[in-house]
Length: 413
Image 1: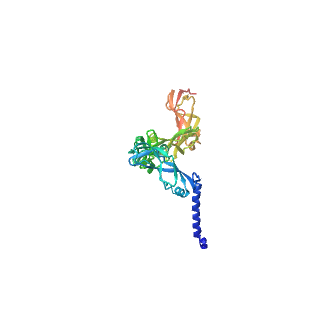
Image 2: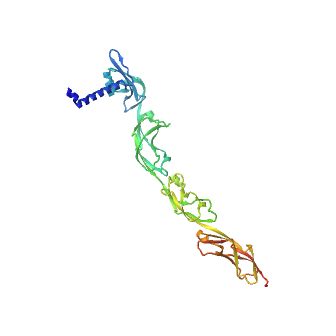
Image 3: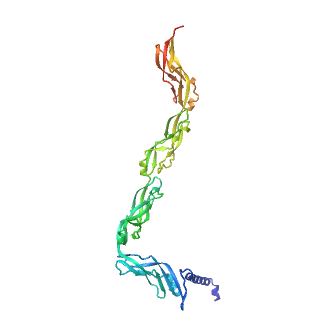
C-alpha cells in the first residue's frame, strides 16, 4: 500500500478521480438553473433546462408544420442518481408527434422519452400547430448589387453569371404562393477587380418585402462578375486666368501632349470631349518656357500616373519708344514739307521680342523716314518706313503706317 502512495501514477489517477467528482458536484448544485432539494423520505433535486430543442415527428414528404417552438423549458425532479447522468448526457428527446394528423389546426401535447423514474414538466405543455401540404417550386435568383456607387473610382460592373441561376424552395403551399422575389446580395464597395465564384446566401421575400423562412436548395449560390475600368483618349486644353504683367505679350500657350487617356465609367466618359488644366495664372509669367499644370479631373475620372502635364508658354516683352523723329528723304530743292497727320515729324514705336534682345535697344538703333522723291507741291499720303536691328525675333510696329503731308514751294532767298 505504501508503494501505491509513492507511485506518481497512483497520485495522478486519484487526483483525476477527485477532479471529476468535484466537477459533477459543483455543476449539479451550482450551475443548475433551479435547485430545490426536497425531503419526503428521500433526497430529491429539481433541475430546469432551458433551450431544449423540440423534435417534430411528421410525414415530411407530404406535410409541413408551423407553430412548433424551436426550444422549450424542461424541469426534471428526482433522485440525484437518476437526475445527474441525464443532465450531463442529455440523452433524451422532447417532441410533438403529428403522425396521422390531417391538414389544419391542432392542439397537441409536447412529449418526451425520459425515464419514469423522474418527474418531468415541460413549458409549454401544449401548443397550437398548423399542418399544411408540402410544396416545392423552382425560382430564379436575382442578384441585388449594393454599394455600386462606392466601387473604386472609374470601375463599373459589365456582366455577371449566377451558378446555379435557380433554386428549389420548399414550404407550405400558402407560403410558396406568397413568394415575391428570391435574392442574393452582392456588395460592390471598393471593388476594383472581377469577381470569381464568390459564394452568396440566398434570401426569400414575399410581395411586401418581408423575409420568409423556407427551405432553400441550395442555400448558397456562386457569382462571377466582370468588372471593367473603361477609358478613352481626349485632347487637352490649357486654361488661363489673369493677364501678363505690363510690357509682356502672349504669343502662344499649349500642352506638350495632344491627348491623354482618361479612365472612368462608360456613362461619365460619354460626357467628356476634352480635358482641361487647372487655370494657369498669367500674372506670374515673365518669360517663355515650360511649366507643370495640374489636370482638372471631373469627379470619378482618373488619369493614372499623370497628375500634371507640361505646358509650353511663349511670351514676348514689349517696349514703347516715344517721340522718335520721322526723317524726310528726296525732298526737291525749293520745296518745304508740313506734317498734317501726324501733326509733327515724330511718332511712337513698339518693339516686341525676347527680353534679352530688346532690353538694350535705344532710339539710336531705329530709323524712321518718309520718301518724298518726285512729289509735286500739294497734299500727299506717303508710307512711313521703319528700319531697326536685323533680328528675326524682334518685331517693330509704328504708331502710324503712313503720314499725310503738305508740300509747298519755297521762294529762293
